[in-house]
Amino acid sequence: MRALVQHKERAIALRKKGYSYRDILKEVKASKSSISLWLQKLPLTDQEKKYLKSRRDSNISTGRIRAATTNHALRLQRDKELFRVAKDEFREFSADPFFHVGIALYWAEGAKRDSTFAFVNSDAEMMSLMVVWIERFFNIRRDVFSARLYIHKPYAHEHCEEYWSKKTGIPIKNFRRTIYKPSGIGVKKRPDYRGCLRLMAGGMQALRRMSFWQNMLIESYRAR
Image (cartoon, rainbow, N blue to C red):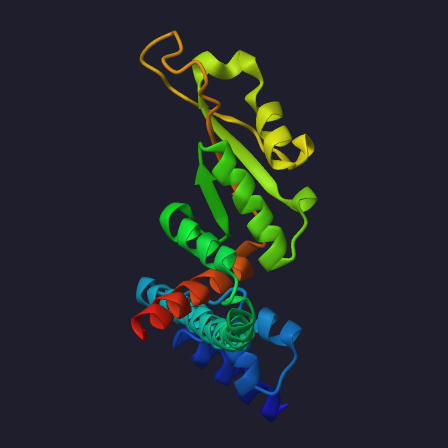
């Protein structure tokens, strides 16, 4: 009986110091239901409540820091392996001038800060060439590409998505919702304009491989 009283007193003392129920369970040899019963009517001062909240926030922050550290380590390991693969691929492909062309085009027109590989342009021939390049060097079929058209409102009735689908071979069902850009005029200024297409393929892994290839290409030309 005396031990039980001591446990209760210890639990109350720890609670007043700002300990959470979980912390108290680690310090006091009692069941969770017993501790809840002992503390349910325990009044806490404003200072004690503030201190308890700070401990909770600290625990949350610590957990997030640990998770972020773990994720960072995993990302570094994945990048290390991906770099090794990209280096082998660069050696394999570097004799092909077309490989260099695609890297240079992406360097000029590709997304750099996104979380996915994305190439954007309004030139249909360039977009068609890039589709072939991605298929050849990323080994990704065009029927799994995603695309999105950006175009001004006066062209909305022309169904330019179909034009781009035919030009690139990307299925129309893979087109995301078209973004209509505002226009200050209600008529077309460029009759042959078909909008600007954004194609996406391979996700973050493709983006990282392209980044590695770009750096390798730069270094190879510097060495000449």
